[in-house]
Image (cartoon, rainbow, N blue to C red; front, side):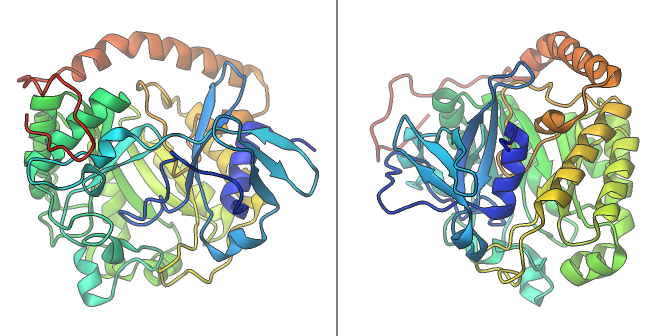
Length: 417
C-alpha cells in the first residue's frame, strides 16, 4: 500500500535509508554531525502535491546500524531522486537540498561558517554555549553526542560577531527567517550567556530567534530575553515517565528535576503569544501512552509539542538500541496533531520554518481523519497565517540595520561587514 507523505516520513525515520555507492550526492548538504547529533543523516524534501503543505522536510537516518537493513533505497541522481521501497516496489519522488555556498565562507576570524551554524530544514541551528557541563560529570543525556561534536565538527567557542556574520550570510543566500540557539547545561547561567547573541541578531540582522537551553529557576531571565526580542523558547522535556527520565537524562533529573521544565514552559507560554513555546519529547523509549500524555500536557498550556522519533545515534551510549516501531510512531504523531487541533495551537504559522529533525505538528495533518473538526482547524490555520504576516514582517526587520558587503563573496573569502 502506498504511503501518504507523512506516513513515508515516519517510516523513514524509523527504518532509515540505504544509499547505493553508485548514487551520486554531489552538491548535497551532506552529513552534519553537529550539536546533539540528531542532524547526522541525509536532508530530504518529500513533495506532497497537497494544499495542506507542499513539501515535508526530514533528516533521514543513513549512518546508524538499523539503516543498513532498511527496505528504502535512494535511487536516481541530482534533479531526479526517488525513494524506492523494496518491499512493495513503490517509488516516491524526493529532492535532496543543496549545500549552500555560504558554508565555505569565512567569518572575520577566519572560521568556516559551517562550523558556526548549519541548516536543518530551512532554519539555521547554532549551538552557542560551551559544551554541556553534564558531559564533565558523565551525567549527559544518553542519546546525545554534543560532547563529541562541539570542538570537532563545530567550533567550541563562537563569538557574537561569528554568529551575526553567519546569520547574515544564511539570510541573504538561503532566505532563512529563523535562527535557533541551543546549548547544554551551564550551571544556571545559560540564559545570561545567550543575551548578547539574541540582542545582536535582533538588532543587526532581523530574524526570528528561538532559544533552547536548560531551564532556570529565575524566570526573570526569560523575561529579559523576551524584552530583547526572543520569539520562541523550547524546553527539552524528553520523557514523561520519571523512571525513564532519570535513566536516560541523569544530569537533568539530579540537577534540575523534571517539574522545572514544565514550570519554565508555563511561564514563557504566559508571556508570549500562543504557540510561541514548544516542549520537546522523544518518542520510542517510554510507553507510547506516556508520550501521548506528555503531548496533551504541553498543548494544554498553549505550547506546541515537538516530538523526535528516537534515533540511536552513532557515538552515543544508546547507539545499539533498536529504532522505534512505525505503527507506534504513527499513533504518536497523529495524537500530536489532534492535541494541537483541540487546543487551537497555531502550528505552521511562522514564515519559511521547516524543521527536518522531527515530524512537525503540521506535517502530521496528513495523518488526521477528515472530519468537520479537521477542516475547521485547517481553515483557521490558513486565516492565522494571513493575519500574522504583518507581525512577522515587523519582527523580521533589523532594529539597527547594518549593511553587509554588497558583492557576493568567493568561496574561502572572509566576510568582513
